[in-house]
View 1 (cartoon, rainbow, N blue to C red):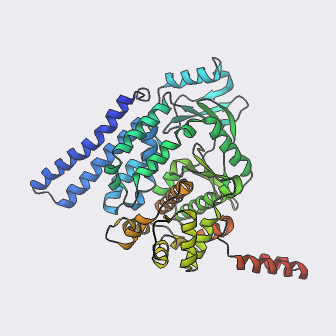
View 2: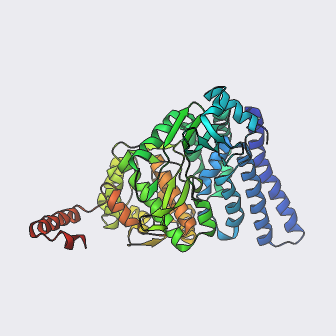
View 3: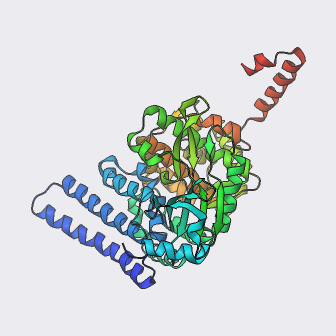
Length: 468
């Protein structure tokens, strides 16, 4: 492939052709029906051709187009099973690979940013990229001190491409809506657009990654590679080997799936509590399973990559989230409703029935009601259908709720993580993670009871009994 298509007119033309392609295939499908082919076969072919064209274009363009495709990839669980296959294959390609940037372009960026003698910084440098993503690609190398490193090189013109793509995608967001039932595409694109400058700033990314690497250093469950060197357009970090989560989704054992799911949930909720930052790009391409967990080489750890998008939460996740979840589980409709009103989820001009709001929320937080919950595509589809069906009470109520700006990224990350858990088909002890890390979720009376037990155990010298 040639350089990243940088001219707005070139990228806009490719993206603008997508709706025309959708319309053309619909006409083709009608013709097939007229000559007698079944609606089911025609529908499946139509979905497959649409998926292939859409994600081929998004992958080729990289930039905002590919980033949008990656964001959609975690929601394929919501698609009806008969059409999910083509999307699944096309979306997985976006999570791990894209057409590479030419070697001459990579060398030009490295020369400009690291100097004419940039090769002296490395004992080895592989020209063939190990991964190509939305705004940059990664090369495997050996740093001058012998450490294996990942060298992320930003595409020239990535900023212009990101903005151009997202503006164009926003123009036909309505046509993309049916791809993922129950998901409003427009706010997703708008939120991505608001974060373009952060995505491109490797200073910010390096700082966020360093904060995580320092906090999780020596952690038995989570591995974050340290930053080795950073400058404009180039980020060098320690290399980590491991199995991409996309491969676990496709071919992993039940044990790998469950372990990956548990660690993903743990990282989602513990990260903000421990670092004041929320990793906000949870698609499978950004995670690896590494051997050597707490129980030895046969156990697994979670490797976490790409800190280009984070939400800054100095106090951790907002306490009202945990409190409202706990009150929902306890069936306290009035308190839940008051909290939602205070936080801006219910606008002052709207009055809703607290019991109806509780009925709307309960199915969504079903995974927190039990000790262990198995996330499945069928469960995800049932939730999407309930919220997306205009005839359902949930759809009508959902339209009246509001998502405050402060919660927008938290909401997307949570939904995305649930989407990945459903792709994994993982059985996860979610409530355990919520009680450990989510402010406001642990019952006050439970905490008081635990404190009494601890004091009694200490007084009687029976700490080991309490531990049991």
